[in-house]
Image (cartoon, rainbow, N blue to C red):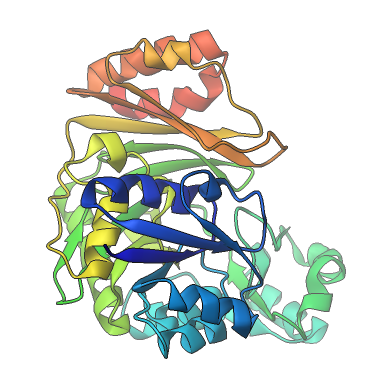
Length: 380
């Protein structure tokens, strides 16, 4: 029986383990936390990702290794790859860990991206903010996610405050300043590439964020075919350049008829959770198929699907479960402000039925604001 090792023991590892059960797979999860939620469904090895003894024990017990988050040290992935097959490869992981390297790769591949610059000092920041027109975002090059490690600069007067907030990171994880993009919509393409180079994408997904954290996703996104094809072409170019194996997401901004790449996530992705019930094959199952060298499954959508993210605490489940297409996912985490603790997916055969179901759920859970933009897109 094949054992899949997963570095990182959060909800993504948990859902990978659940999706791998029908394939007869075993799992070993490694995490720094003894209460990692994936440990409720798979054996858990507790250890630091830079601890070679822990990594050696992990490698000795698995046949292939993968990740459930992108901040596993790339050098640890490289060390592990010398002992067991690792997918995606350490280079892909390293690229996604550094915003400057990542955006430079996008630009080199001809994937449109907003203007950006490396920032090593306050003087450089002042100069680049002036060049970018005043409105921009200062970010750490590494370790930021879900809106963390960022400072919104609205005018040159904000530069000193931005440097005070993040400047100490310039010499450690590095800083990048990006032009602010007044986007009209946020989109993502979730894609998978197999060991032999087969490439597939799920339908383009539209996303809504609140305070930098994903709130809702709708698939398929209501866009024209040419735009969807362009997004998939960008993802294919990226995957082939990195010799990527597994699932990844390319996050995109839509502005004035153009797609601009924001960032890639080298793993299964929050905006692809709807695929569990809303697609012929989920992102989790296809990731496992890819890393194991198995044939990829069909990625077609089954009607229309919306994923609602639960942040901080779980709401009451019955209003979702009483819907014919309602599905509930509790990650088994302790409630905590800002923490992703679960999600729901609502699926329907047509857009109107999905909109009606979301409206009922929004009223029942007093989350009208969360479902309102999705309903507007479905009915607009």
